[in-house]
Length: 405
Image 1: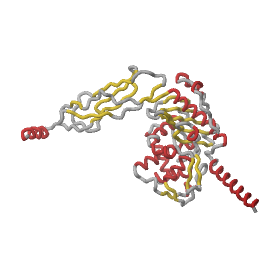
Image 2: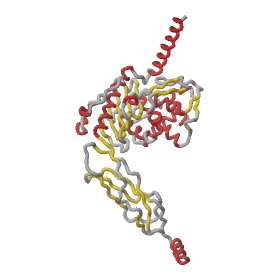
Image 3: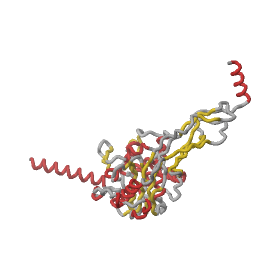
Image 4: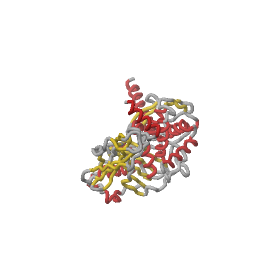
């Protein structure tokens, strides 16, 4: 009797492990070797900025971009057109987040799976036609599992059909000046003419990062759906093993090979590393990690204080009021090379001949930040009040007010 119980228990454990493996290794899969952490590169072995070409990343193309400024810190064949695989879903997620912010639907809304969405192959959460799932869970499935069925269902929610959504994808790519990108589907499955580049992927990654809500999903390592029945393991191994990793999206197909748009932040420095065309996810992850390490080893972020030279008000001509209240715009973070030294100085520049009418929020000047006499950044001076133009009737009103007072 005890032997039967032990055998039954052992069989259940084996079946559970097999189910987990099937769930984890479906397309966008992670091999056992992927879970072996790649040790940190020694800073001494990383090339300097001047010798960046010595990185020897392998793969077919790569780019490293600083997120705040968009400055390219490293690139190799960054405009080579290639199938982007599931990195495509960055655009799918971007359009979804933008629709959410416009109030077209809520994360708590339920979507009904179509026959088309349920028919997707590759990585999936096995949605069935007619099954209901919250949009919050669909976004989670796309970010963590890279689920093709969930991505297509999101496309249908946003645009009514995947074909209509693809039109939106290409229109948004054009707006972002992703000049070497053409989308053919919302999932990233290989299709003729479905192409992008490392540079364009960095552009759309940076745009998605403007929606901080997305990191609540991309930073999840493991989770579940359907009350624990469907397990999710992040296809982006760096989330678990790389310090400061925040996302963003992996991709693997026969046509694309293995690729990733990897994002990470340390000490206010936020980087986007895109690497494409690798034979497997282990070499892809190692190269993305090396590229991020190069960025963190060679660059830093400074956050200057608001310039004390900014006046509280400015003189205005031809206005009902003679003075205009002003305030500083947001002081930018400044990207610097780590070997740069010196104090950041500021210079206030006021627009010439300030003349009414001026509306609250108008730019009336700027603050120029310099390091060793070189301009490194600017931020605006903004009108903090309205100044209406002086008219005959306005002048009469002022005169009568003064007489009566």
